[in-house]
Image (cartoon, rainbow, N blue to C red; front, side, top):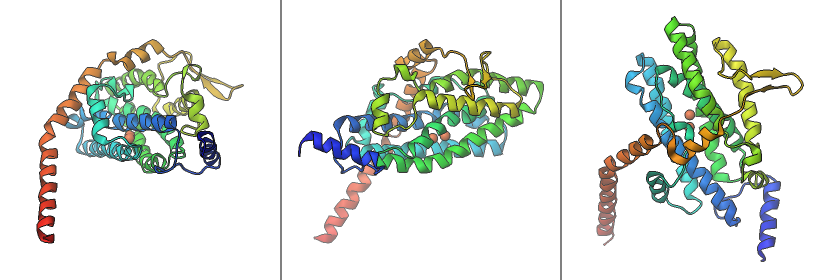
Length: 315
Ligand SMILES: [Fe+2]
Ligand SMILES: [Fe+2]
């Protein structure tokens, strides 16, 4: 069969909403785009545990500590489902992890910002997980089967993450003068980086058209970003706080909130590795990997022992 015909069959399947599965024929660029996206997503889940891990030992109560621990543990689980989904595209987990540890692979730039106060745990849950959810709800219907199925479970857990973040901020927003100030400060610092999570403007996003045609994504970066602004601009009223954007205003004609210009220079600078915590995050992942070496070694030895025993019994 000609490649053109294979491509036609492939596109027809996508148009008819039939999921693409690991053993199906797929264009090389489709495989590569999914592999890049799913592995970057997995890395983001795992690196995303670091800014929050910073506050486990300093959570203000046992209840908050238990909630934060559960949330961070969920993120580790998300990373594992996603590495498994990415492996179906013919790249091993070891290779993916090596690319993360060497700095070759990217992860979401938001995690290169520091978590400076307890209120950051609220702001991360509410804003960062909130932005992630909008992207991920869309991905529950993405065309690659293993990715779509992983996202269904992840999304259920993400909504718990967002609510716990909002709840932590709500308590601070009703607290003392200092707690209110801490709450506002965290929102000020996390707002703009959260908007950057949706990626470059559609006019500057290189892979967007093809990804939409292949239904890897179903909404553009700008559509998702607008949806996020509209959602948060309403939710923040309950907190009695403000978003750090003087241009934020409801536009009756568009039926959306208008918002100010994003500092794309900052975005690209962090992507290139010059954010406040890029080096620290990679160093922490490398250290954890090195310290886990004995666990991998022990697992390997145990597997070998089991294999040998099975062989002896068979003989
Ligand atoms: Fe997650
Ligand atoms: Fe999350």
